[in-house]
Length: 339
Image (cartoon, rainbow, N blue to C red):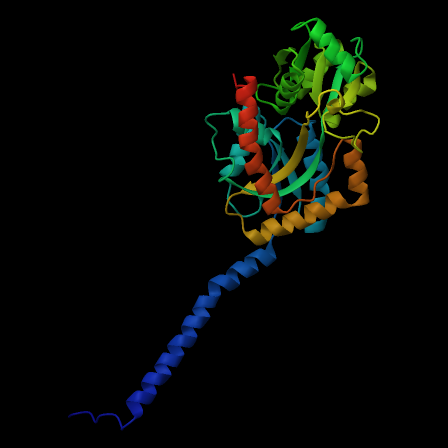
């Protein structure tokens, strides 16, 4: 039996209904990924966040990460765990974060050594620009120029005069080849035209210990790293490395007063793996900026020799990209190498 054909106009009506239903279904399905992403971002964080500090406990990276982490845990409602992963001049721990899932649950607490390392290390286990999403710059500030307590130099001018009288006899400590301490001191030497012998250490703790014992004459480092030595009276602060006086150490004069153009400021910040959702990065940036900008944290940072930075993720990324070639040139001009 032959089935009767559709009534006139019915095929066209059914076809139109099918197209409308298909369109509605496609719209619904198309909305699922966006909705899922939105829900995922709204739900973040739903578990603990780990901040990898690529240096031993007690250094400035560790101090700032723990202070910010405690307050970040309170505002996010999840534990913020600090995981010290020292090694390879900071590249070991930073490399772990570069390879971590880009979900906002693994961050790196880094400092200016991130860019100075990138300037001298020929084979890093990550790309310093492409492997990370800069989150927030927690703080910034000058280094302190400190000398052993019995060095006959109480001012920047006296230090330079001593260095010129006895070229190479004075020595300085750093936390390792290619460290920010070495960059700050080599830049000072080049700017002033003096020669001071470099003694690299494996970390800031032994460098500070030898400054206190009198084994080294000079150490340029952060206020938080130098505090035990300065408080003990076994080391003396004579200047800061910023171009102008700083609220972090208002009693100290800038080295630029006797070395025109000399300036070295250090920063501390948080990085996430590249590809971390922009919404998560922005949330972290907003919360960290709010935390460090509060009166309690401002006071804490000043005691540690730093001030809030308050950069956006884009501004932080631009600074990293700007600094790497600058320090590459400094390294080439002064002979700094990873040794």
